[in-house]
Image 1 (cartoon, rainbow, N blue to C red):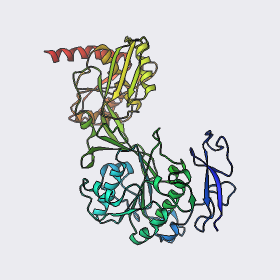
Image 2: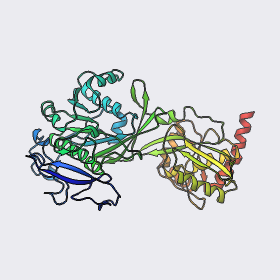
Image 3: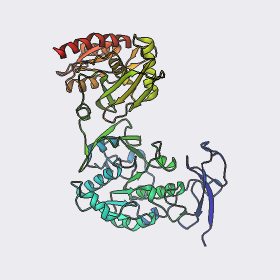
Image 4: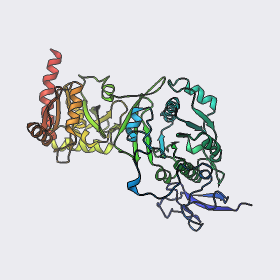
Length: 494
């Protein structure tokens, strides 16, 4: 008879302990240990990572042992390993390939998380269907939907074909035979919180089940050389549900984010062992699935009002991709004496800091005003280079002067009111000029560097490059707005 072992797992960090503690000794979280029961079986002789039970951290070999290995697992010199032996596999989506660093790496494990209804399953089904239509062997494992429900959802997604293999199962052991027979290039598990293994006696979605199931699936993918795409749920604070060890177990962690009230979706990588984590993918949710947006700047500025005060365009940089975003602000008198500061898509602390700088370093009164600021289009802006644009949008609303429609701004604002340098000004300048902007407010040091580089011939001037307006202090930007905002307003009235 199999022997049961009881451990206490932390729901915050995933650490396991043989006895209960009021506070987790590993991460310090209070009242986070939950009692879980393991059953010692031939495929799982010890509970992984349990202090005092066998070898800590030894993964279960149940599923991996049933799938043949892709190679003989003998040691090799690093110089003898050819990077072209396992070329990347294109996913069929340019935006996903951009975030991954060029496509899927064979034998890698990718974790895709996001809010409910954001489009995780749609993206996974589109990628799986396109690879299957191109001739690759793909296995789609669903623990939440039946085969008929997946078929109904696939009918509105074009280009999927009918070669995709669907398996509805919630047990890890049920994947052994299909994995061995099909030898798939890609295995999609939707979602990891619904999968459970017989080696752990607890409910699906618990810390122990998620950790052990993911460990067996990852070991099998590494052994067989298959790509494993795990779809994961998120908690209320936006982090991936389950133990943090799940993020350390996988090779790539992708986050699908966006506002369900908007059509745009952003795909980011918070961890990527095979590429950069600075790249971003932009999608648009349509009636026939997710569409890749190759020129996000045009879409974000599509509904922009050019004559309304309180708006400023900022050329942001996400990885190697420039993206123009409209920042909006509304300033109104505080009716109850205590001013409110409300933000959407912007950091609260950053907006509060800029309001203090405007109050002390310029001639604008902000203490008695309510301030509402947002990034249009459902984008979340965290780059410090957007400081000058936020300050101009707030000042524009407070002075009731619209920023000229052909003007964008970029720069980091310090507490002394100085405008600091930003990176890759040439890329931002080219993107702004491509969309018809004639002037770009930049830090004075960046303007001098650009002029010096052009004189030396290192940065040739493009036909659509816009004029650089050097700004040293935020007060100088406000004075420029007073002068050029009035002139733009008079031109619009005439």
